[in-house]
Length: 256
Image (cartoon, rainbow, N blue to C red; front, side, top):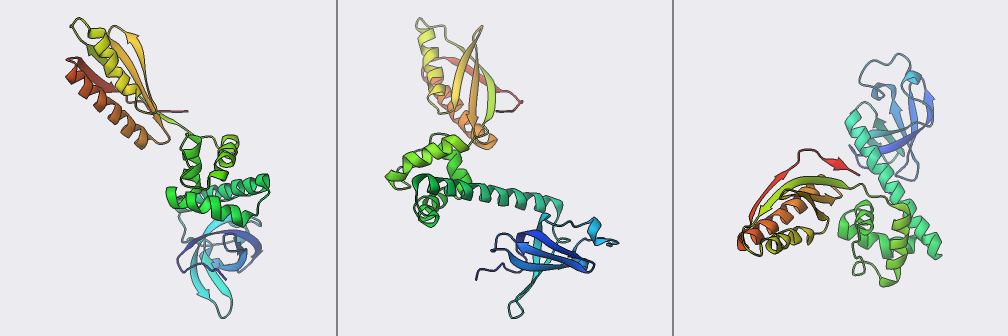
């Protein structure tokens, strides 16, 4: 039977509150039972345990001791900071949601969950690190035909389209481009066509020789990389075409 390791963070549900401690179920380990002594409920003195812990409450606990012979797992709420609690709960909810989507896919295609997990989920996790990242990539148009069996591609794309909304981070900046030569406008267009050739980037003419560059991606870090790539390509083409080019990125970040 799969059991947690000492010092591991686990998500638990409170099933019984007593004066001396709390009994919980470990939700990631088939609802295995665990116990939190009153001394591990809080880092400060506990006057009334029921003021701190409620029935059916779902929280993050740290494994402090495992006694396999007695089938006992001792845990602690006190050793989990609010920041760690929030991070672990976010991960737990995310994983639960992705598993539910695989369950939806299995029902939709009338297949067993374990078979769909093996054929679809495992290859995607191996490629992208998690189902969450994989589904985001699919939502953004990533081709997964070489990662999972081809007979699953359309079904996965349809499922993602119906259930996944990707938050897009956007960066903007202003560019100027001038070229006094006869075919100056054509050469300037060639410069900005390099920007638009980068996926996620677009150009709008503002007038008076200025242009708005917009680059979008799932994260600001990736948007920064995309914008840097597009500007470098533009600068290279501008130099080749004798176009005087400059760019300044806006400080404001946008999310949509």
